[in-house]
Each structure stands twice: as C-alpha cells, then as structure tokens.
Length: 484
Image (cartoon, rainbow, N blue to C red):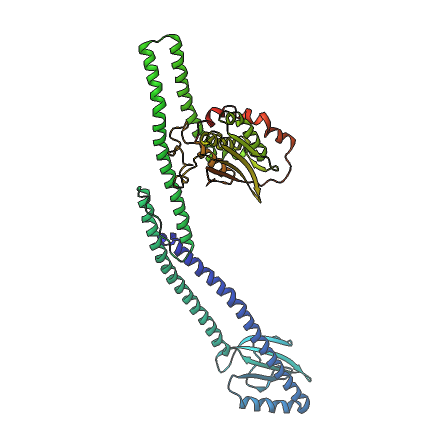
C-alpha cells in the first residue's frame, strides 16, 4: 500500500477524492443547517398560530368552550399529530391528550423541546407554553419524530455520495495510473536506449500536445543538443589532433635536425625562429579554444558595458587599412549614426576584426571590401561585404563549425576557428551570424541585440574607443590573421 501511495497518479487521485469529500461536507453542512433552521422556524410558527387560535377561542367562549374545542380537536386528529393540554393554575389537566404536565417543562412562557411519554412511548415534542387569564395554562406541541425519516434520508444520501465519490476517485486513479505508467515505461525504454549510445532514438510524442508531449519535446531538444555537443567534441578532438600534428611534427623535426647536424649559428637561429612560430601556432589554437569555451559558458556577460558598435567597426577598419593597401584593396567603412549596444567591447572588436581579416584573405587584388553598421529596431548588425570567391551554399552551414575549412581556404593560413568565434560572440550577445551571397563575393551579417538607447558615459566611451580598445587586444593580431 505504501508503494502504491508513492505513485503520483494514485496520490493525485486520493488527493482529489479527499478534496471532493471536503467540498461535499462544506456543501452539505450549510444545507443541513439551513434545512434545520427552516424546519424549526416553520414548526415554531405553526405552534404559535395554534396557541393564538386556542387563545381566541378561550376569549370568545370561555374555559368551557375551550375545553370542548380541544376535546373535539383531539378526537378528530391522528394520534400523536398534535399535542394539546389545558390545565388550571395547579397544573391539573382539564382537556387534551396528555394525562399530566410534562416533566422538565418550566412554568414560564416560551418554546421548549422535551421528551414525554405518549401512549407509553418516549417522544420528542416541541412545545409552546402560554398562559390564559384566570391562571389557566396552555401547552401546544407537535411530535418532531416524524422528521427523523427526512434526517435519515439526508444522511443516507450523503453517505452514498461519499462512497460513490471515493469509488470513482479510486477507479479513476487506477486508470490514470495505468495510462501514465504505460507512457512513462515507453519513455524510460527510449531514454535507456539513448543512454546506451543509440542516439537515433527520440521520445515519442502524440498529437494531443499534453504535458507529457511537451516534456518529451523538451527532452528531445535536450538530446539533440547533447548529440550535437558529443559530435562536436568528437569532431573537435579529431580536428585538434589533425591540426596539431603538423606543427608539432615540424617542431620535432627541426629540433631533431638541429641536435644531429649542429648547423652554424645563423642557420640554427633561423630554425629556432621557425620552431617558435610552430609553438605560437599551437598556443594560438589553444588560446582560441579557451576563448571559445569562455564565451560558451557566458562568463563574459559580467563584463558587458555600453559600446558604440559603429565606432568599433570604424576603428577595426582603420586598423586593417595598411594591410588592405598592401593588396590594393579598397576597404571602406560606412560611418553611420552611433549604434549603441550592451556588450563586451573586446569580444565585439575581435569578432569584427575576424570578419574583416577573412575578407582581406579572400578578396582579390584591387578588390573591394565594405563595412556597414545598421540598426533596425532592437537589432544591430555589422555587415562585411567583399567581392572574393564567396562560399558555396552547401558549405555555408558548416563554415562556423570549429576547425572546419572549406576547399577555398585549404591553402590559406588558419585553423578554422575564426567564424566559430564570431558566431559564439554573436550568440553571447543574443544574436546570430548569417552568410549570404554578394554576387560576387560574400556578405556576412553579425546581428546582435541592441538594447541601449541612452548616451554613453564619458568614462565608458573612453574604454570602448581609440587605442585603449586595441591595447586590450594587443595579442590578437597574430591570432586574428590565422583564424577562419
């Protein structure tokens, strides 16, 4: 029984039964009380009217006329229907169907309920006691036992209702238990299969769209995310092993060759410089991964301040202008109105820098790159457009994956983390990263939530503009030129 009560459907059913019983009692008690008051009030009014009628007869016909009237009424009525008694001042019976003054009835006017013997049978009687001129006493009463059957019917009906409510509640609880347990058993089997590594299974849903369906849909979404994370970890592990193998192998080969051949100092230092570059490449990969992990956990939200994204884009454009001039590329920033957002200034600068750096990598000689910042309602977007080779539609959903490198980027420096970082920064700021065709070239939109309409404070504006911003990111130049 204890195990049965631990089941939530059964406990819920018993709870509803108890609630129904309480509601039934709360409904029945006022009804019973109202019924009792109505009956007693009506009975008191009838007895009062009888007493007044007999008093009128006494006033009109005297005591003898009242005695005759009472005897006539007693002879015509059903035995026990009405109880009448007329006595003198010494309580000696003069007329009526009682042989003596009832015990327990005080000698004071009023209404009383007492048990008296009528035909040698104890009977509960409601009395109205009144006095008449000349010291006469008049009792008018009615047997209230005839109402006991109504009382029994009332309580019998209430008991039947309690039993029926309890049975229906128990049967309903058992049916609900069976229905829920069957569905929960199916969910448990699916979850067990998924926990054993079979990720193709998902929790079943029905068209009813009830609570269990909503719960199953939420769990399926969680499983989708877990499967994506597991596959992502697997792919990242493979990519890390692949991308680290080359620089580490080159580093080992250089050091081994130096140890065996002992070349002259100039050649030795050249090999050392190359080894340092290999080490920097490995460190850059790990720094990028750590930065992505920090962004994914949302820890950088605590450093959000008001940032003018238009000014950040202008400074990034200015920073990359010398590199654009070396390739005869036109790099232009559309200086629109201030675009104030709430965010991390360094991460936003790194994200915009990665997008501009990517555009410079793939833009042709004498090409064109345009940077724009637009605000539409509560969304602000940075748009970078180039006229390079672009990205095929089949690869666009993949280029933001970590360590993914398309066919076009195989021969360029980088490890495939640049767009991953941009997408992570966009998500951190409540936005998205969109890739579109520029005909020719690529149009990249980094959309983030604006949420700022107040002017920037002077101290915050100083932190998010000018050399100070790039001083915070002084070590990003080597990384940003290698990440895609």
